[in-house]
Length: 396
Ligand SMILES: Cc1cc2nc3c(=O)[nH]c(=O)nc-3n(C[C@H](O)[C@H](O)[C@H](O)COP(=O)(O)OP(=O)(O)OC[C@H]3O[C@@H](n4cnc5c(N)ncnc54)[C@H](O)[C@@H]3O)c2cc1C
Image 1: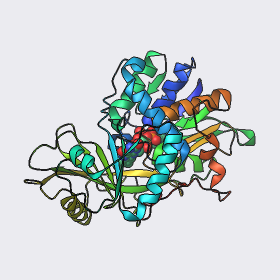
Image 2: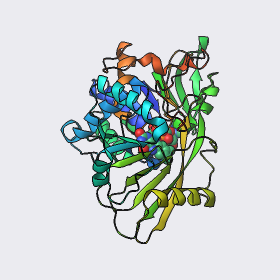
Image 3: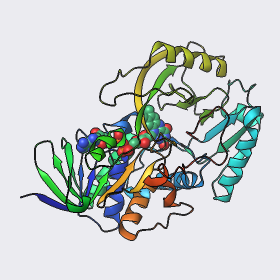
C-alpha cells in the first residue's frame, strides 16, 4: 500500500527544510520530506551564507529583513543560535553607481531596514588596510552579516522533527504521480515505493526542472557555476563586515578561522554546469582574476596564500529571482530558482510557502507573493531591480 501524507516536500535542502518547519510550526505536522542524498548536501552546503538586505526588489529586501530578525532571535525561536554572526554588511560602489545606491537605501529605509551611509573614514575603521580609492560611497547594514547555511538547514530539520515531521534521506524521487486532469498527487521513489499527498512541494534547487518536466511543467532554471576561493592573508583577518565590492565585482567574507572567502560578483558571462557532474575546484583563470582583484583591494596582505577552492551552482532563473507559488498543474507547488539569494530569505520562504498553502495569501510585511509567480516569464513581466547597478547584473 502506498504511504500517504498531507504535505510531501521533495528536497531536503535549506528551502525544503524551512518549509517543513514552518508548516509544522503552524500545527501541520503531517509532512514528509524526501531527500535523495543527505540533508543539506546539495547547494545549501556550498552557500556563502551572506545575509544582506541590499536588494533592488522590495519583496526580496523585506524577506531578507525578516531573515535577519529570525536569525538574530534563533535561540529564542529554535533553541539553537543557528551560527549567525551579525558582523555587519557593507556595499561599496564607484562613482557610476552612487545614484542607484542612494535609491536602494531610500527604498530599504521605507521598508524599515536598518541601513546607513558611511564615509570613507568609517569604512577604513571597519576594515583596516583596505584600499578605498575607487569607492565613491558605502551603505552599511549593522545588523546583517554572515550565517552558516548547513547549520541553519539542520536546525530547521531538528526543530521540524521535534514537531513530528518525517524526514527520509537516501530517498530519491524518480517521478511525480499525475492523475486525471493533470493533478499531481504524489511521487514514485527510485526504489519503486509510492507516496500519495494532497500537496507536493518541489524544493530541489537546480534539480527541479527534470522532475517538473515529467508532468509537463517547464521550469526555467539553469545551474550557473560559482567559483569560490579561500585565502589566508598571512595573518588572521580581524572581525570585519561582509563586503559587496561593486567597484571590483567581488565579495569578501571573513571565515570564523580568520581566512577570507572571496566570491565573484561579475555575472556578465555566466557559465552553466551539470549539477551532478562538475569539477569541484576553481579554475586557474578564476583564481588569477580573484587574486588580482583582491590584491588591489587589500594591498598590504602580509603573506597571502590560497588555502582551498570549490565550486557550487546557483539555480538561476531568467530574472535571477526565485519561483515560489503554485505550478500550472494542480497539486504541485514550486519553491526553486533561488538564484543566490536563498540563504538569507530561507526563514521568509518557509513562512511564505506555509501562508500560501494554508491561507492563499501572506501576512509577511512588504512581500508581494505575486512577484514570485511562475507565470511571470511567459507574461514577459520579469521581477527586476527597481534601481539596478551598472555592471553588476541582475543578482542584486
Ligand atoms: C556557491 C553559492 C553561494 C551562495 N551564497 C549565498 C549567500 O551568500 N547568501 C544567500 O542568501 N544565498 C546564497 N546562496 C544561495 C543559497 O545557498 C541557496 O539558494 C539555498 O541553499 C538553496 O537551497 P535549496 O533547498 O533550494 O537547494 P539545495 O540545497 O540544492 O537542496 C535541494 C535538495 O534536493 C535534493 N534533490 C534533488 N533531486 C532530488 C530528487 N529527485 N529526490 C529527492 N531529493 C532530491 C538534493 O539532493 C538537495 O539536497 C548561495 C548558493 C551557492 C551555490
